[in-house]
Every structure is written in C-alpha cells, then in structure tokens.
Length: 268
Image (cartoon, rainbow, N blue to C red; front, side, top):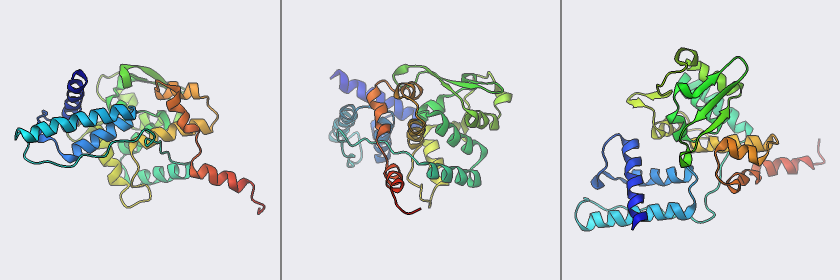
C-alpha cells in the first residue's frame, strides 16, 4: 500500500512538472502515460520497478473510471520485459549527420543542446536543471556540476573543448555565476518534453527521425568505450549506480560487427 501511494505521488509530481498545471485524475491522457513510461526507461529504472509504477497507475485509473471521476478509459502501454530495455547509440557517421542537420536547420540554442548531450552524457532532466553557476570554463579546461541527479546524487563532469564551445555559444561568459536556468523556452524553463519535441521537429523526415535525447547519452558512453576508457570511469561520468548498467556499452552494435567483418575481407 505504501509503494502504491508513493508511486502515485511521484507520478503526480512528474505530471505537474511536465504539463505546468496541477494534477487531477481526469486530466491524465494516453500521451502522459506513454511519456511517463519512457521517462522511467530513460532514467534507467529496473524493469520490475517500471512495471510496478505503471500497474499502480492502471489500478488508480480503474478506480477513477469506476467512481466516474474519469470521462473515458484508454488502453495502457505494455509492461517491459526483463531484458527488453536495451541501449541505442549512434555511430560516428550518424552523429556527424545529426550535427550537420542541426547546424543547418537548428537555432544556436538547439545546436548547443545536441553538442552538450553528446559530450557530457547528461540525462535530459539533468540538462533542464542546469544553472549557469553549475558551469566553470577556463581557457583550456571546464567542468559541470550535476546537482540532484538520479537518486539525488551529485557528480562533476569535465567539459571537453566541444562542450565548452557549446556553452560559450549560448553566452556563458555573459551569464557566468548566475543562478538562472541555462535553457529557456517560450513559456519559461525548457522541459524534457520541450527538448523531445524540438529534436523530433528538426529531424522530421530524416533517417534519424526516431532518436531520443537519451540516445545521445548512450552515444556518449559508447564513444568512451570505443576510446578505451575504463568502465569505472564511464560509470562515474554517467552517474550509474551499478557497473552492470555500464557494461551494456561493451556489447557490439551492428556497425561494430560490420567493421569487424570488413577487416578480414580479402578485397582492398
């Protein structure tokens, strides 16, 4: 009963934050449920935890329908399987294609978001929570502090040159030390949903139209593996609580297998 109550409280908080209006049962839509499930997956909750939270919502909404607090019923998404949550990352060609497309069609802010995600591995909510005072940039170095990441844990991420230039492009030196949020949308602080919609809009009708912000986090981790960085270091940078989570990036992608086969080709 306690878990059920906590699941509903957590969902209500997420709902308020994403939709910018107070939660009531009759305001829940199928899109909310689908996005919440994806939010849980993106934040690397275990499959059984995700399923419990989704079932708690299902029972809650069944009660709402039976007591006529909801006007209509709608189908719930399928539960996740124990091994169905797999990481998707972009290979270097896809990453270059992504950057070219954003540089051609995106605003400076949008381009910076993509470069920061690719070069820091931030979760989308962590990106939205960033304030200028969390960023430190000097001539040759930089760092970023993640406050209250998953599990309310903080971590420090070094900024490479690409990430430093991305922050400088959106006026880091003008805002240095400020307590203001870095990423602002038309209606206030930029939200995860706003970033998802921005990416979907710019990549519409391209071969990358189905990517999510979390795929860029996976790409960051896979790039580190391919560069020979140890799993322990990657886990610290990504904020993984368990090393098992980081090990998924050691598994080869199709392009990895394709490259391996090409190496033994007799044709020059």
